[in-house]
Length: 282
Image (cartoon, rainbow, N blue to C red; front, side):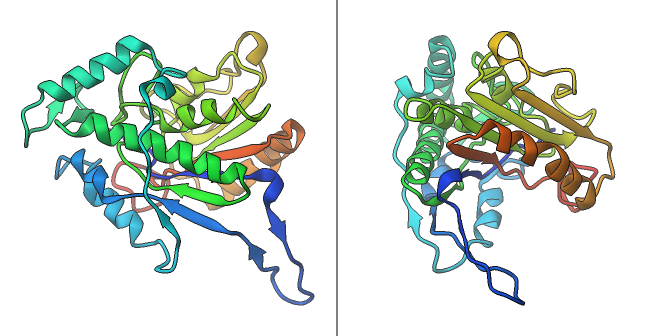
């Protein structure tokens, strides 16, 4: 089994504002919103590691006064900036053929229900909406499911049907020159990496547990063609701690992002590196 991110976090790099207060930790002014909705329960298989209960647990950490915004559906053309038309059609058909009230498996890990295609369109649409709000100067969380970072252009896998972060990033690239992606999920985001592996407009930075699903994300995977040097993978040994993650960010990711100068920072904010995740070993 594999876990995947619930919450793409979209950060407008140029809009972050900080205020210093002598003698006290600096308060951070961060206008923010949460893009989510109950409609994601249409994609649900109770007892599976990726179920509606997962999103409900994540939502308990959202402040009560947070501004919540309902997502809009992504259009098939939005998905087609990342995924093949054949893949989009196949997922739609598989969901339509799945009997109501049942879960139908694409592979041993990844299921759909009769409502999964619409839920996936809303998940990608939520990520796009979060990007749009970020480009307007607001930090935004898209708390969605099904997740996305394992979905490659022509295949669903690892609980993921469509790659929400990649679709949102592709949308952002229509407006800005460069986007950076940080993926701190326990598992390597092979789908997100594949989507931008040959691009010099996206800096993809992943820190993940070595040797787990999907078996990618090694340091020698650095991009191809114009994208060489724009993929950075840091696999960590099982049992790594917060100090190890802090070192990766301080010594590798932050300098790379500063040098890249993106207009937008997108985070695949998987929570499974935490010590009590049943599928992880961090």
